[in-house]
Length: 89
Image 1 (cartoon, rainbow, N blue to C red):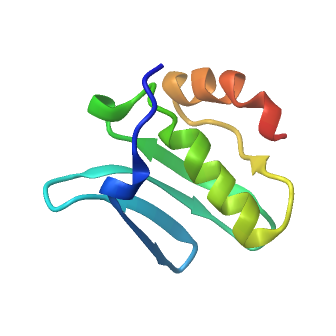
Image 2: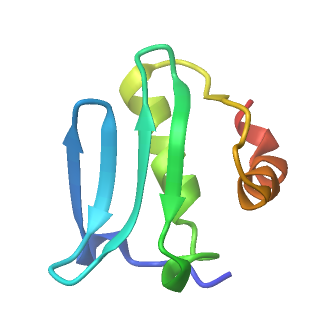
């Protein structure tokens, strides 16, 4: 996994959503609620395996002050991500 330098990207926060982006594209985003439940997480396929999902989950944990609760995935790719992120439960 090649990590990414997040200082090169803009982090936006609005209404329970953190988004990493630059002027050309969105790298990834996470939607969450005040209970620390992750409602949706997405990472642009070009930027996968670079620690973006982990960084987004860290931001949610810092913001909410709660343990991360991952909701049931709605896709096979979501199930794969859930298995790799069990450390956040």
